[in-house]
Every structure is written in structure tokens, then in C-alpha cells.
Length: 197
Image (cartoon, rainbow, N blue to C red; front, side, top):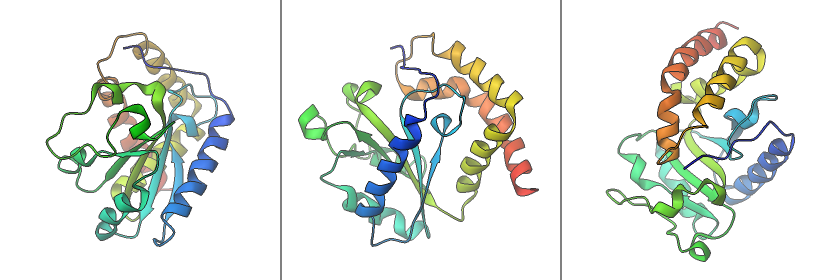
């Protein structure tokens, strides 16, 4: 599949604000910080038009409190990823209720991801829930802020993404692997920059 890829639009910030409000409502029993991350959070950077949202909980003990609080909404919970990344809970926010689209609300451990869930045109956002005081929280925030303040790195990332989106990908994860080497190198620089400023 060719992934959707669009020039930056201020509408992404508006979409994030709406998603953030909905998450604060759904997760009101938790103390949260919610940040806009990823390429849609960086003015001037083209991206897949899917908002990346980072939800910070107080600790790992709160991670499993989140799935039941968003159940019955337009989220698909990727429990499948918990083994590989036990520090994170991942959700896809769909444009419609999963049942309306013939999709499950949860992809369980050991289950295959339904092919239709790879259709990025059905998605509004990717929700990443992690502890706020973790190295992964810092890594995401640092890289976003680094891209916002280092135009040469932003331009290099833009060029790489423009090249990659021309290719056929089986899933979005395959596309992410294409960016992996660049991301690891620049995220390390970003974290060093962020922690020293």
C-alpha cells in the first residue's frame, strides 16, 4: 500500500486539541499529561494525516487502567504490543466505531492484526500511553522539540519521508522500520540536546 502523506496543516493542531479533550474526559479518574507528538506536531513537516498523541500516566501501575476507560468508543486497543513494549499501551482512534467497520475493539496477545486495520484512511490518531517520568516520554518530547528548533534535521527527515512514501508497504510498521536508522541517530542527539537545555 502507498501510505497517505500530506503537507503540514494547522488543522492537525485543531484535531489534536479535540482528541486531547476527549481523552481528558474519558480518563478523568487519572492524573494525566497529554502531548501532541510525531510529524503532525511539527510545523512545516509533511506527514501521514494521523495525529500521534502521547498520554503520560503517573506510573506503570496505571497503564492497565486505561483500556477499560476508553472501551466502547472509537478506539482499538493493541494489547498485542504489550509483550514487545510492556511500558506502553497503544490504541488506534478510528473515524468510526470499530464494530461499524467490522473491526474488533481489541487485538489480543497472540492475535493477528486484521488486514483492514492497516488501512490508514480509517484512522484519526495513534495513542501512546506511557509513564510520564520514563525515558520513552523524554525521547518523544525531545525529538518533537528538536525537529521544531533544528530546521536542517527537519529538512533531512522530510526528504527521507518523501522518499519512503513513494514505496509500497505492507503495513505502517514496515514504513516505520524504513525510518528507524535515521530516528535512532537523531533521537539520541535530541535527547542530549533536550536534557542539556
